[in-house]
Image: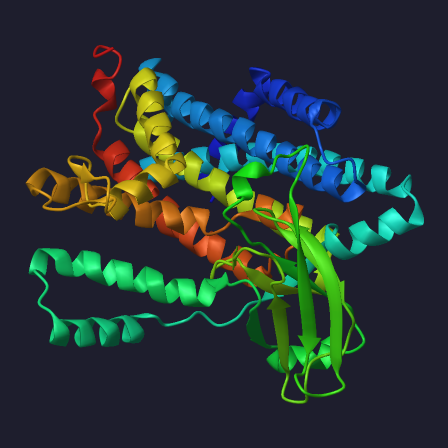
Length: 464
C-alpha cells in the first residue's frame, strides 16, 4: 500500500500545483450561488427548493464529470508522453500500483470537491428554510427535505392475458407469422389501456399492501403522488395549466374507515396530496379509488400513475447517501479516463472517453433504436421495421448491449430522488458501489491495467 499511497499523494499534489482544485472549487461554489438567482420556479417554497436541488446538483455533477475525464486522461497520458512516468517505474513499483494510485488520487480530489459543493448546497437550503414562515417550513419538512419511502401497486403480468387473446384470435382467423408480433403488440396495448384509462363516469382502484410498514406508520400522515394525462394535455401551458376535477376515496371499502375528497389536479405533472393516518385495514392493505367526473378519459400509466409516500428518515442522511451515489458515478468516469489513457495519447484518449460518456447520455436514442428494431426502413404505422436486415439486427444487438450497460448506471438517480424527497437507502448505495464502481468500473480498470502493463513506455515519446 505504500507505493499506491505515494502515487495517490503525487496525483493530488500535481492537481494542487496546477491550481485545478482551486479553479473547480470556485466554479462549483459559483454554480451554487448563481443558479438560485437565475432559475425560474412556480413561486412556492416547495417549487423553488425542488428546482434548486435539481439544477445545482445537475450542474455540480456535470462539471465534476467532465473535469474527471479530462484529469484522468491527462494525468496518465501526459506523464507518459513527457517521460515523467518512466522515471517512476524504474523504482520498485508495479504498473498496476501506479494505475490504482492515480485512480485513488483523482477520487480523493473528487470527494473533496463534491463535499465542498454538496456542503454549500445543504447550507444554502438550511439557511433559506430558517427564514420561511412556519407553514412553509412544515411543507418542506414533510414533502421535500425528507427521505420518503414509496409503495406502488404490484406490476400487472399482462403476458398470460395477451397469449390467451392471441390464441382465441388465431382460432377464428389466420395471421401471417410476420404480422404476429405486431398483433401481439396491439393486443398488449389494448389490455394495458384497460388498466391505465379511467373512463368518464367510472373509477380506478389501486390496492396497496403496506405489509410490515403498518407497525411504524400508525398515526403518521401519508402522501399520495399521482400523475395522469388527457387528450387535452396539449392545451395546458406552464403559465396557464389546465386542471381537472377528480374524486378520491381512500381507506377500507364498505367500512367506516374511509376518507373522501375532491381535488382539481393538473395533467402531465406529478401532484401530491396528504391523506389522514390509519386508513389501512388490519391486513395492512390500503385501497385508493379515483372517480373521473370529467367528460373525457384520464390516463394513469402503470409505472408512475400512483404511489404512496411515507417518511423513512431525515434529509441530511438522505443527502449524504445521494452524494455517495454521485461519487460512484465519478469513480466510473475516472476508470474510463484512465483506461483510455493507458494505451492512447491525451487528445485521442479524451475523445474516446467523451464518446463513451455521450453514449451513456443517449439513453433515449438507444431505447428508440432497440424498440424500432433497427435504423432503416421504419414503418410509420407500426413504429417498427417490418423485415430487419443483417445490418439492422447487428445495430440492435450492439445498441441493446449498450442500453443494458447504461441502465446499470441510470437505475440510480439521486438527483431526482433528493428533489422529490424520495428515500435513498443504504442498500441502494451499496448496490451502486457494487454495480457501478466494482462492476463496470472494475471492467474498465482490468482492461486499463492490462493495456498499461503491456505498453512499451520507452517508445512513448518518439511516437508522439
